[in-house]
Length: 260
Image (cartoon, rainbow, N blue to C red; front, side, top):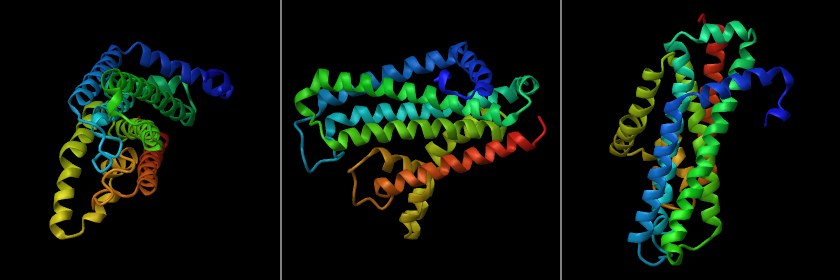
């Protein structure tokens, strides 16, 4: 990857890679996510019955562990992104980074690039581990279809998007703890509460414009077609990308224009 980057961006990317490699919390988080994905995939493959073409999710009950692994790694990627950027403000290292990189555009690009690539690598690892557990324990309960490959692709996209949303939150909030609290609060409490409110008001379709709903629609390809809370996968992908681009643009502008 380094070889194909513009020469003036390479020092920034190298610096961001060193920060990630030397951060022990990132290694612990990655190991925990992989362990959860393996355990969940083995459990779902062991407990599931034979494939049911009318069941949910569309890829079969045995693959529920794969969805669990993708959900966990997406949340972990958001936290990783928030810590990777917010901690620079929290520990007052951002002014030092800017001192050695006068061009803040390059600094932001390097941060987003490294965080996104790390999230992608983690997502690939989780999918490989989950698939290993699924086929190792329940290979007769899983049918390899185009929907399964679409789920894998959607999972990779969702994880990268959430890592960049998390990184953007860290820059905007200027604190890793506040950014992580905001992300967890939104995912666990905020958006589910809005789902209930929208359902009570009789306008459940509006929640298809929210990021968690868009994430589920992006990953759960072919599943829950009658749900009022989930947009069809192509539309969900667009919504998730718009949230990622919007938050990234806002944080980029904040980094460029606000005093450190």
